[in-house]
Length: 110
Image 1 (cartoon, rainbow, N blue to C red):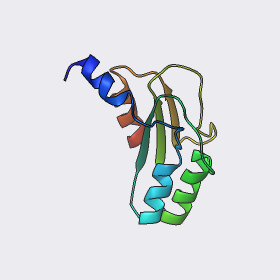
Image 2: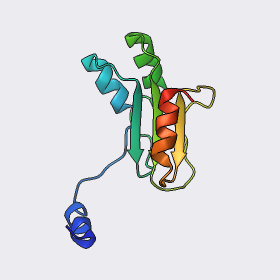
Image 3: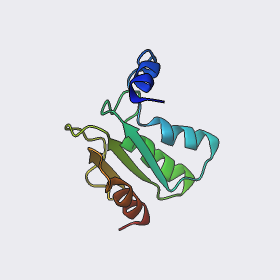
Image 4: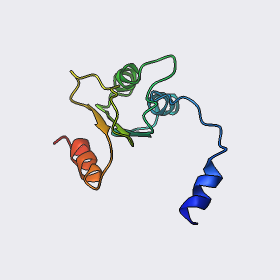
């Protein structure tokens, strides 16, 4: 598919606010074992009833897993949903060829 065709296909989709807590809440409700949650976003980073760092804390406590959260925004504009005091959370603003290696290193604890 050509880029202009792809843009036309997605232009009328009903986009809304991004609730970055949903991956952790979904995994918790279903008892899924996750070591790293990754959220790719257009930088509309938080809407919902629970802040993502609270959802991650709840997931960790109830599942007994020291899970990590990486939020990767596709635009390099100011945002932050990570708790800066938590080494298991990472905000990435912008995206280039190094992003997958950064994410892999973060997941492994480097």
